[in-house]
Amino acid sequence: MILISSLFLLAVPFLSTESAASELESYSYSPCTRLSTPKVPGAEVLSITGVEKRNYTVTAVPQLLPTPIFGLNFCEVDVVLTHPKAGDRVLVKVWLPLQHWNGRFQATGGSGYAAGNFDASLGPAVQLGYSSASTDAGVSVNPLSPAKWALRQDGTVNWDALTNFAHRSIHDMGIVGQDITAQFYGIKPQFSYWNGCSTGGRQAMAAAQRYPEIFDGILAGAPAINWATYVVAEQWPQVVMEEEGTFPSPCELKFFTTMAIEQCDELDGVMDGVITDPDICNFDPYRLVGNRFNGPFSSSGESLWYGLNVGAALDSLANTNATNGRRTGLPLFVNDNWIKYWLAKNPNYNTSSISYETLYGLFDQSKREYDAIIGTDNPDLSEFHNVGGKLIVWHGLADQLIFPKGSIDYWERVERLMGGSFKVDEFFRLFLAPGVDHCAGGTTIGAVPNDILKSLVNWVEEKKAPDTVPATLSNTPNGNKIERILCPYPRTSRYIGGDTTSAASFKCV
Ligand SMILES: *[C@@H]1O[C@H](CO)[C@@H](O)[C@H](O)[C@H]1NC(C)=O
Ligand SMILES: *[C@@H]1O[C@H](CO)[C@@H](O)[C@H](O)[C@H]1NC(C)=O
Ligand SMILES: *[C@@H]1O[C@H](CO)[C@@H](O)[C@H](O)[C@H]1NC(C)=O
Image (spheres, rainbow, N blue to C red):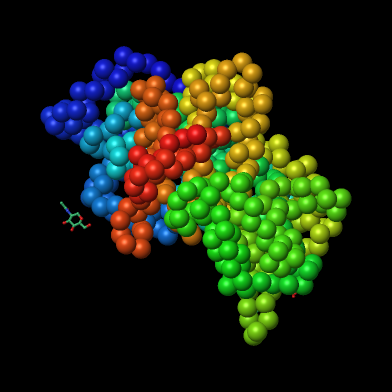
């Protein structure tokens, strides 16, 4: 954590005037190729390469970057490092704006089995004036498959790679990014942030739990915390379909979601196709079929983990493959690969054949072997709180991949552990977004937080705690935007009358 307020006075002239901006530009030309090797505790830096990029285009990437970004000017620094005895090779990429650096550093997270998204995450950060970093953690950059790194040649788990993916790369990237930023601009970044969703959200929480001194502000979207547990729970619908010998079609699954929304839409006083509080929705899918479809439970009836909320789409986790008129299960790549590589330790393991009994065993094994390294659900955030860090978590309530109740469960555990001596609200707030799917993608029909990073920056720098977060739904049938507010948990947004498309018609209760 870097808290040297006088540096801000130095930084201001660089940021606010035209001539100062060009001063910075001319000042920064040669250093891009002449930066020296950063010192990273616990790692050895193998190489550093700097190159200036002008008028650079970041192309759109489905799910990550909806529209391309044109005309970026920055210095790109590649730092390659390794850890003693691990034989790994970790790439950290740092992008430094050539003009209008905002004095801040932003580390960015990954998605699925990738620890970083590189261009798709660096582009938006640099466009906003941040110096920014992304890392491959020494594993592959393929979000869909860990096939290249999960197991060693001899078929055993590659613990070094998993450690990098789970948390070590967060530390290394933070140190490298801050060092390179300081060298390039001649002053340390005044504030450092973490920004990520899904796996990037899990990394965010790992930063708060394990490396509390690196980041002043941490933003975690739909965090993949409780990893060792929830990922196995994602397999549950597949096991049920297999064991019960019934494979609902996408159309049948959609029927459940639609019926749930129809029944509970109006509970919040507004007919907008969105369920604001799934917990007060008494929709009973059993009445429709007489089959169980809420989260996994053991043979003795004990709940093993949460299920999806009513109103969420079901066809990612209960996906099927219809070929030649025959329907078979199609497990999501996240649970499919976790079970194959880390639990069965066999890339050819058939996850479609898992029985209830087998799944209970996999639950236990996953927690026993991996919770300590990648569970990322330690509620003790006291160090992060002590150094003045601020944490915002947000999660779409219609997330169909990561159970939002896992985020709520975590918040409540932090509250139970730390809430006695002060208000958790002082440094950690959870915002739930009704009708919003995983990281605002997929089947999102609710208002999406439109600049939650700014809410975090205001909290860290201006001490303005976010009592609400503005949210917008842009792609409505009639093209008119719908504005809402998100509320810090356990409060929810309540309609108080007036124009239902205006945020002013809602308040947190
Ligand atoms: C920048 O790149 C765009 C294409 O993305 C091109 O049309 C434009 O001429 C370039 N501008 C300069 C100043 O090179
Ligand atoms: C669906 O099943 C067919 C036949 O078994 C197979 O060839 C195909 O690869 C499967 N599709 C997917 C997406 O797994
Ligand atoms: C996997 O298991 C399912 C269910 O038992 C079975 O239908 C399928 O044929 C198996 N696939 C392979 C490749 O063995």
